[in-house]
Length: 64
Image (cartoon, rainbow, N blue to C red):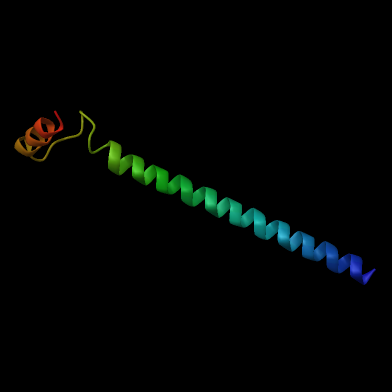
């Protein structure tokens, strides 16, 4: 009886640990992807408000 109880407790602990690890990993991955998306794609987007048009023109010419 005690062995069965210990086994079930261990199994539930392992399952909860695995679930929490999985959830935290997924959450951090999603947040990182969102941050990357905002920083990378918004910078080179055409409608992004430019601070320096001359610099943007140089960057555009360098890319061609």
